[in-house]
Image (tube, rainbow, N blue to C red; front, side):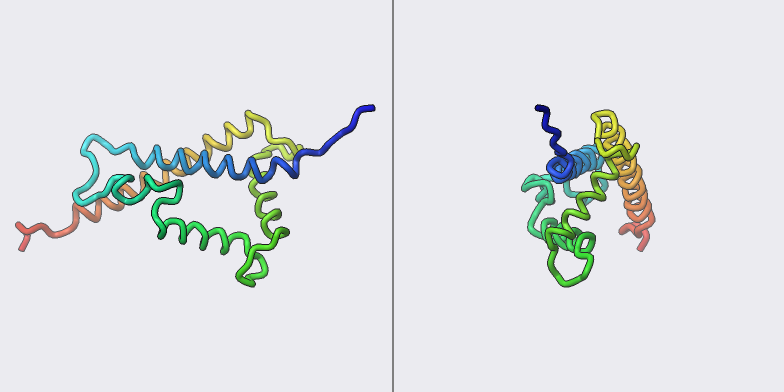
Length: 145
Protein backbone atom coordinates (compact mmCIF):
# COMPACT_ATOMS: atom_id res chain seq x y z
CA UNK A 1 0.00 0.00 0.00
CA UNK A 2 1.36 3.40 -1.02
CA UNK A 3 0.53 6.33 1.21
CA UNK A 4 0.51 9.81 -0.19
CA UNK A 5 1.58 12.45 2.27
CA UNK A 6 1.17 16.11 1.46
CA UNK A 7 4.30 17.70 2.88
CA UNK A 8 3.57 21.14 1.48
CA UNK A 9 2.25 22.54 4.79
CA UNK A 10 5.35 21.29 6.59
CA UNK A 11 7.83 22.77 4.16
CA UNK A 12 6.13 26.12 3.71
CA UNK A 13 7.44 27.55 6.96
CA UNK A 14 10.88 26.07 6.46
CA UNK A 15 11.13 27.36 2.89
CA UNK A 16 9.98 30.80 3.98
CA UNK A 17 12.68 30.96 6.62
CA UNK A 18 15.31 29.64 4.21
CA UNK A 19 14.38 32.16 1.54
CA UNK A 20 14.36 34.95 4.10
CA UNK A 21 17.85 33.99 5.23
CA UNK A 22 19.04 33.79 1.61
CA UNK A 23 17.61 37.21 0.84
CA UNK A 24 19.25 38.73 3.90
CA UNK A 25 22.55 37.11 2.91
CA UNK A 26 22.29 38.47 -0.62
CA UNK A 27 21.39 41.91 0.67
CA UNK A 28 24.31 41.95 3.07
CA UNK A 29 26.69 40.85 0.33
CA UNK A 30 25.39 43.47 -2.09
CA UNK A 31 25.56 46.20 0.51
CA UNK A 32 29.07 45.25 1.57
CA UNK A 33 30.45 45.64 -1.95
CA UNK A 34 31.65 49.23 -2.10
CA UNK A 35 32.84 50.97 -5.23
CA UNK A 36 36.43 51.98 -5.95
CA UNK A 37 36.10 55.11 -3.81
CA UNK A 38 35.26 53.07 -0.73
CA UNK A 39 32.64 54.01 1.80
CA UNK A 40 31.76 57.66 2.36
CA UNK A 41 33.38 59.49 5.29
CA UNK A 42 31.85 58.50 8.60
CA UNK A 43 30.28 55.37 7.13
CA UNK A 44 30.35 52.45 9.52
CA UNK A 45 31.04 49.00 8.14
CA UNK A 46 28.70 46.12 9.04
CA UNK A 47 30.59 44.96 12.11
CA UNK A 48 30.78 48.56 13.37
CA UNK A 49 26.98 48.89 13.07
CA UNK A 50 26.39 45.71 15.04
CA UNK A 51 25.56 43.55 12.04
CA UNK A 52 27.96 40.90 13.28
CA UNK A 53 25.50 40.20 16.09
CA UNK A 54 23.12 38.21 13.91
CA UNK A 55 20.93 38.61 10.82
CA UNK A 56 19.11 41.62 12.22
CA UNK A 57 22.10 43.41 13.73
CA UNK A 58 21.81 44.97 17.13
CA UNK A 59 18.79 45.18 19.43
CA UNK A 60 17.29 48.06 17.43
CA UNK A 61 17.48 46.00 14.23
CA UNK A 62 15.71 43.13 15.99
CA UNK A 63 12.96 45.48 17.22
CA UNK A 64 12.47 46.89 13.71
CA UNK A 65 12.28 43.38 12.22
CA UNK A 66 9.69 42.36 14.81
CA UNK A 67 7.69 45.52 14.15
CA UNK A 68 7.67 44.91 10.38
CA UNK A 69 6.67 41.28 10.90
CA UNK A 70 3.82 42.35 13.19
CA UNK A 71 2.61 44.95 10.67
CA UNK A 72 2.69 42.43 7.81
CA UNK A 73 1.16 39.42 9.57
CA UNK A 74 -1.24 40.81 12.21
CA UNK A 75 -4.28 40.90 9.93
CA UNK A 76 -6.82 41.80 12.63
CA UNK A 77 -4.43 44.37 14.22
CA UNK A 78 -4.96 43.02 17.73
CA UNK A 79 -1.25 43.24 18.54
CA UNK A 80 -0.73 39.47 18.26
CA UNK A 81 0.03 37.04 15.45
CA UNK A 82 -2.21 34.00 15.63
CA UNK A 83 -1.21 30.66 14.15
CA UNK A 84 -3.73 31.27 11.37
CA UNK A 85 -2.28 34.71 10.57
CA UNK A 86 1.23 33.25 10.59
CA UNK A 87 0.26 30.41 8.27
CA UNK A 88 -1.46 32.80 5.87
CA UNK A 89 1.72 34.91 5.82
CA UNK A 90 3.88 31.87 5.17
CA UNK A 91 1.51 30.64 2.46
CA UNK A 92 1.97 33.97 0.73
CA UNK A 93 5.74 33.53 0.92
CA UNK A 94 5.43 30.00 -0.46
CA UNK A 95 3.25 31.25 -3.31
CA UNK A 96 6.00 33.73 -4.22
CA UNK A 97 8.37 30.77 -4.57
CA UNK A 98 5.94 28.54 -6.47
CA UNK A 99 5.95 30.64 -9.64
CA UNK A 100 3.92 28.18 -11.73
CA UNK A 101 1.31 27.63 -9.01
CA UNK A 102 1.51 23.83 -9.03
CA UNK A 103 1.89 23.57 -5.25
CA UNK A 104 5.56 22.57 -5.42
CA UNK A 105 8.58 24.84 -5.10
CA UNK A 106 11.30 23.34 -7.27
CA UNK A 107 15.02 24.07 -6.96
CA UNK A 108 14.75 26.04 -10.21
CA UNK A 109 11.92 28.20 -8.81
CA UNK A 110 13.89 28.78 -5.60
CA UNK A 111 16.96 29.83 -7.60
CA UNK A 112 14.92 32.15 -9.84
CA UNK A 113 13.23 33.72 -6.80
CA UNK A 114 16.56 34.16 -5.05
CA UNK A 115 18.12 35.78 -8.11
CA UNK A 116 15.13 38.12 -8.56
CA UNK A 117 15.25 39.18 -4.89
CA UNK A 118 19.01 39.61 -5.09
CA UNK A 119 18.66 41.88 -8.13
CA UNK A 120 15.89 43.81 -6.38
CA UNK A 121 18.03 44.32 -3.26
CA UNK A 122 21.07 45.28 -5.35
CA UNK A 123 19.02 47.95 -7.11
CA UNK A 124 17.57 49.19 -3.82
CA UNK A 125 20.99 49.51 -2.19
CA UNK A 126 22.50 51.10 -5.30
CA UNK A 127 19.82 53.81 -5.16
CA UNK A 128 20.43 54.29 -1.44
CA UNK A 129 24.17 54.51 -2.04
CA UNK A 130 23.65 57.09 -4.82
CA UNK A 131 21.41 59.18 -2.56
CA UNK A 132 23.96 58.98 0.23
CA UNK A 133 26.77 60.08 -2.10
CA UNK A 134 24.69 62.93 -3.53
CA UNK A 135 23.89 64.11 -0.02
CA UNK A 136 27.55 63.90 0.95
CA UNK A 137 28.69 65.68 -2.22
CA UNK A 138 26.16 68.49 -1.81
CA UNK A 139 26.91 69.09 1.88
CA UNK A 140 28.84 72.29 2.59
CA UNK A 141 32.50 71.81 3.52
CA UNK A 142 34.60 73.91 5.87
CA UNK A 143 36.01 75.64 2.76
CA UNK A 144 32.51 76.81 1.76
CA UNK A 145 32.04 78.91 4.88
